[in-house]
Length: 137
Image 1: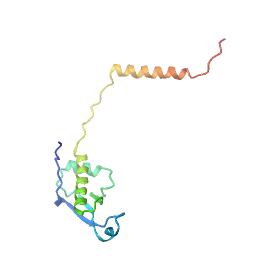
Image 2: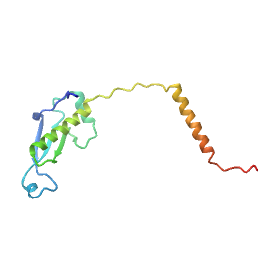
Image 3: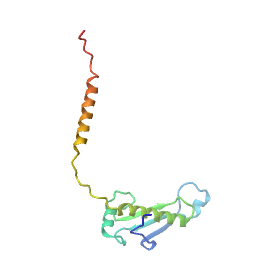
Image 4: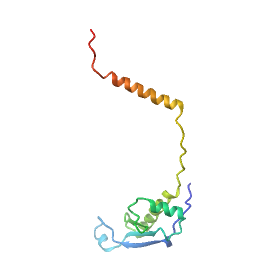
């Protein structure tokens, strides 16, 4: 099992209860069960490198001021929506926490070059056979 290196606590996020959209009957109009989660990237305890990668993401949930805004309204329970919003924030942070390994440029092998050229020659021969049939009778 993969451990999370950068865990977000509830103290670093701001929750706002709002009314959910969509179907739900009378309950939707009276109860504020949906949650807006706001997480300020600059004021967080995340390492600087992860903060920079988060800010560099082209994600519509991240504002120009560097605040992540997540809306959760899948459940009728406020606590479940809070947990869902926190899980989605953690998934976003986990996605940038992994640094991709730098690719080393390598030369193609002789065998792969030959297979490529052979494939091109074969394809050219197939296309050449599509031409008009010459009547040398």
